[in-house]
Image (tube, rainbow, N blue to C red; front, side):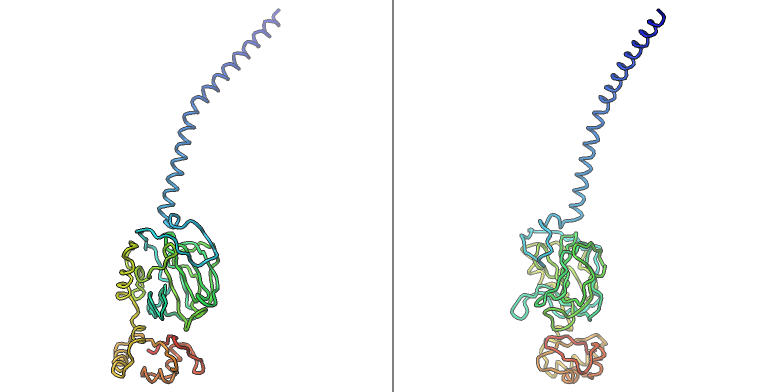
Length: 314
């Protein structure tokens, strides 16, 4: 009799316990449901904020629909206006000498700036970004690199002697990407430097001041309807100086004036080789010696010089 009562009591207790646990679990789930909904909303908001921050930090994501390692540049539709962030930059080379401006040259458009560098000089990334192209083009850029930057620009570095990066590599501003050279369609060692927006070439002088080794400002506001006229003004303000002198009229009076200016000021001067010129004729014209020309340009007397080649003479 006592055994039956104990079994009955145990069974009732177990049923009540299970009922209470089920009710408690249901209460817990009921309380947890609003929390789950709130957390889901928070996660969605955080993800949205993260995406917005990435888009603000990387305008290039808004401008370019594809990533390709096949072509150097492909023009797409330009925005009517676009603010380009020039902060955290690094000059691609320490050279201050522009040997050829952006614009029409020899019957065709020269879509970059030529900067005098020597073979082996370090070439650096102008801004942080990702390397899109590392290639060799025999009849064009020679050894070249294309980098897409977070500020929306793409920069091209041509005629280098050696690549120091690989495609799809992330680089920081100032990181070495290659060495100066004379490869491809080039008549003398120099860096061909281009800045492009949506594949369209913009004058680097609008943003870079090589002579002062600086940018023109913290930002540059691109306007599709005015950038061409701004480019002309930029060339006048920040274009080549000694290079212009080499292409100017070489009359005796102007030549003597340049020689006097060179000897008195101590400025670095360059000569652009013309057809038929030799080291001796250049030395005579510039009031220097063949030995000095060879020493300044790291060449030998027997080395052949070509039309268009840039030689330092002081």
